[in-house]
Image (cartoon, rainbow, N blue to C red):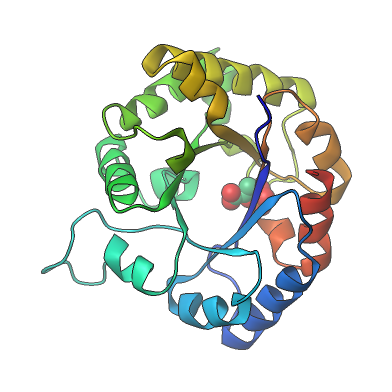
Length: 248
Ligand code: PEP
Protein backbone atom coordinates (compact mmCIF):
# COMPACT_ATOMS: atom_id res chain seq x y z
CA UNK A 1 0.00 0.00 0.00
CA UNK A 2 1.40 3.40 -1.01
CA UNK A 3 1.51 5.71 1.97
CA UNK A 4 2.12 9.43 1.39
CA UNK A 5 5.29 10.33 3.29
CA UNK A 6 4.94 12.90 6.05
CA UNK A 7 7.88 15.06 7.16
CA UNK A 8 7.26 17.28 10.18
CA UNK A 9 9.58 19.78 11.82
CA UNK A 10 9.63 20.05 15.61
CA UNK A 11 10.98 23.49 16.42
CA UNK A 12 10.96 22.78 20.19
CA UNK A 13 11.69 25.89 22.31
CA UNK A 14 13.50 27.70 19.49
CA UNK A 15 12.96 30.77 17.28
CA UNK A 16 11.48 34.16 18.12
CA UNK A 17 8.46 35.71 16.46
CA UNK A 18 10.37 37.23 13.54
CA UNK A 19 12.57 34.18 12.89
CA UNK A 20 9.59 31.82 13.20
CA UNK A 21 7.72 33.75 10.50
CA UNK A 22 10.79 33.84 8.27
CA UNK A 23 11.41 30.10 8.72
CA UNK A 24 7.75 29.30 7.98
CA UNK A 25 7.81 31.38 4.82
CA UNK A 26 11.01 29.70 3.65
CA UNK A 27 9.52 26.24 4.18
CA UNK A 28 6.21 27.23 2.53
CA UNK A 29 8.05 28.55 -0.54
CA UNK A 30 10.00 25.35 -1.18
CA UNK A 31 7.62 22.58 -0.09
CA UNK A 32 7.28 20.13 -2.99
CA UNK A 33 4.29 18.07 -4.11
CA UNK A 34 4.08 14.41 -3.14
CA UNK A 35 5.04 14.80 0.52
CA UNK A 36 2.89 15.94 3.46
CA UNK A 37 4.83 18.69 5.24
CA UNK A 38 4.22 20.26 8.64
CA UNK A 39 5.90 22.39 11.29
CA UNK A 40 5.26 22.12 15.03
CA UNK A 41 6.00 25.56 16.42
CA UNK A 42 6.09 26.97 19.96
CA UNK A 43 2.53 27.71 21.18
CA UNK A 44 3.09 31.46 21.32
CA UNK A 45 3.98 31.65 17.62
CA UNK A 46 1.22 29.37 16.29
CA UNK A 47 -0.96 32.27 15.22
CA UNK A 48 1.82 34.18 13.46
CA UNK A 49 3.21 31.05 11.80
CA UNK A 50 -0.29 30.01 10.73
CA UNK A 51 -0.67 33.33 8.96
CA UNK A 52 2.76 32.96 7.33
CA UNK A 53 1.75 29.52 6.03
CA UNK A 54 -1.66 30.64 4.73
CA UNK A 55 -2.27 29.46 1.18
CA UNK A 56 0.65 27.03 1.28
CA UNK A 57 0.56 23.24 1.60
CA UNK A 58 2.51 23.27 4.88
CA UNK A 59 0.46 22.22 7.90
CA UNK A 60 0.57 23.91 11.27
CA UNK A 61 1.33 21.66 14.23
CA UNK A 62 1.59 21.87 18.01
CA UNK A 63 4.22 20.20 20.18
CA UNK A 64 1.93 19.45 23.11
CA UNK A 65 -1.60 19.96 24.47
CA UNK A 66 -3.56 19.32 27.66
CA UNK A 67 -6.31 16.70 27.60
CA UNK A 68 -9.08 18.60 29.40
CA UNK A 69 -11.54 20.69 27.37
CA UNK A 70 -11.41 23.87 29.47
CA UNK A 71 -11.31 25.06 33.06
CA UNK A 72 -8.92 25.70 35.93
CA UNK A 73 -5.68 24.35 34.43
CA UNK A 74 -3.33 27.30 34.72
CA UNK A 75 -0.84 27.53 31.90
CA UNK A 76 -2.37 24.75 29.82
CA UNK A 77 -3.72 24.77 26.24
CA UNK A 78 -6.69 22.74 24.95
CA UNK A 79 -7.30 20.97 21.65
CA UNK A 80 -10.10 23.46 20.87
CA UNK A 81 -7.67 26.36 21.34
CA UNK A 82 -5.26 24.73 18.89
CA UNK A 83 -8.05 24.20 16.35
CA UNK A 84 -9.05 27.84 16.74
CA UNK A 85 -5.61 28.78 15.37
CA UNK A 86 -5.74 26.35 12.44
CA UNK A 87 -3.57 23.60 13.94
CA UNK A 88 -3.81 20.34 11.97
CA UNK A 89 -1.62 17.98 13.99
CA UNK A 90 -0.21 17.64 17.48
CA UNK A 91 2.58 15.59 19.06
CA UNK A 92 2.10 13.43 22.14
CA UNK A 93 4.72 11.50 24.06
CA UNK A 94 7.81 13.26 22.73
CA UNK A 95 10.81 11.91 24.65
CA UNK A 96 11.59 15.35 26.07
CA UNK A 97 8.11 15.48 27.57
CA UNK A 98 8.37 11.92 28.87
CA UNK A 99 11.92 12.05 30.20
CA UNK A 100 12.75 15.73 30.80
CA UNK A 101 9.32 17.04 31.83
CA UNK A 102 8.34 13.77 33.52
CA UNK A 103 5.08 12.94 31.73
CA UNK A 104 3.69 9.54 32.68
CA UNK A 105 2.45 6.98 30.21
CA UNK A 106 -1.07 7.59 31.56
CA UNK A 107 -0.86 11.34 30.84
CA UNK A 108 0.55 10.72 27.35
CA UNK A 109 -2.38 8.37 26.67
CA UNK A 110 -4.89 10.97 27.89
CA UNK A 111 -3.35 13.61 25.64
CA UNK A 112 -3.31 11.24 22.65
CA UNK A 113 -6.98 10.41 23.17
CA UNK A 114 -7.94 14.10 23.39
CA UNK A 115 -6.01 14.96 20.22
CA UNK A 116 -7.76 12.27 18.19
CA UNK A 117 -11.19 12.89 19.74
CA UNK A 118 -10.83 16.58 18.87
CA UNK A 119 -10.21 15.78 15.22
CA UNK A 120 -6.50 16.62 14.97
CA UNK A 121 -3.91 14.26 13.53
CA UNK A 122 -1.88 12.70 16.33
CA UNK A 123 1.86 12.16 16.01
CA UNK A 124 2.46 9.66 18.79
CA UNK A 125 6.16 9.47 19.68
CA UNK A 126 7.68 6.22 20.91
CA UNK A 127 11.26 5.11 21.48
CA UNK A 128 13.70 3.51 23.85
CA UNK A 129 16.50 4.94 25.97
CA UNK A 130 20.04 3.71 25.35
CA UNK A 131 20.09 1.50 28.45
CA UNK A 132 16.82 -0.10 27.35
CA UNK A 133 18.29 -0.85 23.89
CA UNK A 134 21.46 -2.23 25.45
CA UNK A 135 19.37 -4.47 27.71
CA UNK A 136 17.42 -5.81 24.69
CA UNK A 137 14.16 -4.12 25.69
CA UNK A 138 13.58 -1.89 22.66
CA UNK A 139 10.56 -3.74 21.27
CA UNK A 140 8.92 -4.11 24.69
CA UNK A 141 9.28 -0.40 25.36
CA UNK A 142 7.79 0.51 22.00
CA UNK A 143 4.95 -1.99 22.48
CA UNK A 144 4.04 -0.52 25.85
CA UNK A 145 4.04 3.02 24.40
CA UNK A 146 1.71 1.84 21.61
CA UNK A 147 -0.61 0.48 24.33
CA UNK A 148 -1.19 4.12 25.35
CA UNK A 149 -3.38 4.33 22.23
CA UNK A 150 -5.61 1.34 22.96
CA UNK A 151 -9.28 2.25 22.52
CA UNK A 152 -8.52 5.82 21.38
CA UNK A 153 -8.02 5.63 17.62
CA UNK A 154 -10.31 4.20 14.95
CA UNK A 155 -9.25 6.02 11.77
CA UNK A 156 -5.73 5.20 10.56
CA UNK A 157 -5.56 8.63 8.91
CA UNK A 158 -5.79 10.31 12.30
CA UNK A 159 -2.65 8.57 13.56
CA UNK A 160 1.06 8.89 12.77
CA UNK A 161 3.66 7.08 14.85
CA UNK A 162 7.10 8.66 15.25
CA UNK A 163 9.78 6.13 16.19
CA UNK A 164 12.41 8.20 17.94
CA UNK A 165 15.13 6.33 19.80
CA UNK A 166 15.94 8.62 22.74
CA UNK A 167 19.69 8.10 22.26
CA UNK A 168 19.41 9.51 18.72
CA UNK A 169 17.50 12.70 19.51
CA UNK A 170 19.67 15.78 19.31
CA UNK A 171 22.85 13.71 19.62
CA UNK A 172 24.03 13.55 16.00
CA UNK A 173 23.93 9.74 16.31
CA UNK A 174 21.08 8.50 14.13
CA UNK A 175 19.79 4.93 14.06
CA UNK A 176 21.20 3.00 11.11
CA UNK A 177 18.84 2.26 8.24
CA UNK A 178 18.58 -1.34 9.46
CA UNK A 179 17.97 -0.43 13.11
CA UNK A 180 15.18 1.95 12.05
CA UNK A 181 13.57 -0.57 9.67
CA UNK A 182 13.67 -3.34 12.29
CA UNK A 183 11.71 -1.27 14.83
CA UNK A 184 9.36 0.24 12.23
CA UNK A 185 8.47 -3.24 10.94
CA UNK A 186 7.82 -4.33 14.53
CA UNK A 187 5.59 -1.30 15.15
CA UNK A 188 3.53 -2.12 12.06
CA UNK A 189 3.19 -5.75 13.14
CA UNK A 190 2.20 -4.71 16.65
CA UNK A 191 -0.42 -2.31 15.26
CA UNK A 192 -1.71 -5.16 13.11
CA UNK A 193 -2.28 -7.16 16.30
CA UNK A 194 -3.79 -4.23 18.24
CA UNK A 195 -6.09 -3.09 15.41
CA UNK A 196 -5.87 -5.13 12.20
CA UNK A 197 -3.36 -5.48 9.34
CA UNK A 198 -5.24 -3.07 7.05
CA UNK A 199 -5.21 -0.36 9.73
CA UNK A 200 -1.49 -1.00 10.33
CA UNK A 201 -0.71 -0.73 6.61
CA UNK A 202 -2.33 2.68 6.42
CA UNK A 203 -0.63 4.37 9.38
CA UNK A 204 2.47 6.40 8.58
CA UNK A 205 5.51 5.69 10.75
CA UNK A 206 8.06 8.50 10.85
CA UNK A 207 11.66 8.09 11.96
CA UNK A 208 13.07 10.78 14.24
CA UNK A 209 16.51 11.22 15.81
CA UNK A 210 19.31 13.21 14.17
CA UNK A 211 17.80 12.90 10.70
CA UNK A 212 19.81 15.20 8.43
CA UNK A 213 20.05 15.86 4.68
CA UNK A 214 22.91 13.33 4.36
CA UNK A 215 21.19 10.39 6.07
CA UNK A 216 17.53 11.08 5.22
CA UNK A 217 17.39 9.28 1.85
CA UNK A 218 18.77 6.01 3.26
CA UNK A 219 16.43 6.03 6.25
CA UNK A 220 13.37 6.94 4.21
CA UNK A 221 14.11 4.31 1.56
CA UNK A 222 13.30 1.65 4.17
CA UNK A 223 10.04 -0.17 3.53
CA UNK A 224 8.31 0.85 6.75
CA UNK A 225 9.76 4.36 7.12
CA UNK A 226 7.18 6.88 5.89
CA UNK A 227 8.86 10.20 6.56
CA UNK A 228 10.51 11.89 9.49
CA UNK A 229 10.10 13.99 12.59
CA UNK A 230 12.92 16.49 12.45
CA UNK A 231 14.32 18.58 15.29
CA UNK A 232 17.60 20.43 14.74
CA UNK A 233 17.58 20.20 10.95
CA UNK A 234 14.08 21.75 10.78
CA UNK A 235 15.34 25.12 11.99
CA UNK A 236 16.70 26.13 8.58
CA UNK A 237 14.58 25.99 5.41
CA UNK A 238 17.45 24.54 3.34
CA UNK A 239 18.20 21.56 5.56
CA UNK A 240 14.52 20.87 6.30
CA UNK A 241 13.53 21.04 2.63
CA UNK A 242 16.46 18.80 1.65
CA UNK A 243 14.99 16.17 3.99
CA UNK A 244 11.48 16.76 2.67
CA UNK A 245 12.74 16.26 -0.88
CA UNK A 246 14.49 13.04 0.12
CA UNK A 247 11.07 11.67 1.11
CA UNK A 248 9.57 12.03 -2.38
C1 PEP B 1 12.97 15.43 17.77
O1 PEP B 1 13.09 16.16 18.73
O2 PEP B 1 11.85 14.95 17.52
C2 PEP B 1 14.15 15.13 16.97
C3 PEP B 1 14.09 14.15 16.13
O3 PEP B 1 15.25 15.93 17.17
P1 PEP B 1 16.63 15.90 16.31
O4 PEP B 1 16.25 15.80 14.85
O5 PEP B 1 17.31 17.18 16.63
O6 PEP B 1 17.38 14.68 16.77
